[in-house]
Length: 130
Image (cartoon, rainbow, N blue to C red; front, side, top):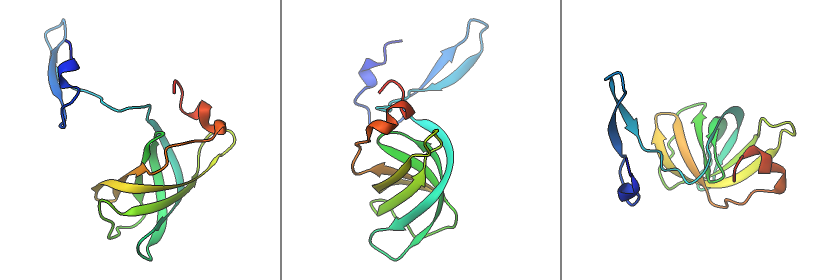
């Protein structure tokens, strides 16, 4: 099915697909701009407006942001700026020190969009196809 008519939609697009065996199942259209890698690496965060800091587990990462889990529940809000520091799980254990804006909060899960999406040459192999 041609999905180009949905490219400017601001909400989740869910379609029903039918397998040749007759089974019907839902499919959600992926609209990310880049590759998102699932990881499990630990690090730290520092709240840029308040004296809040703590440990994090980064669950996924892309060139534009991360999904992470806070070790303890904190009063973090959408729009807050966080400084994130962690090492990647590549062979060089590359150190990441990035500032980002909180875009999503679900319990202790936080989605953060990086303010500066540029990466050094040492990470080109970490994001394949980009």
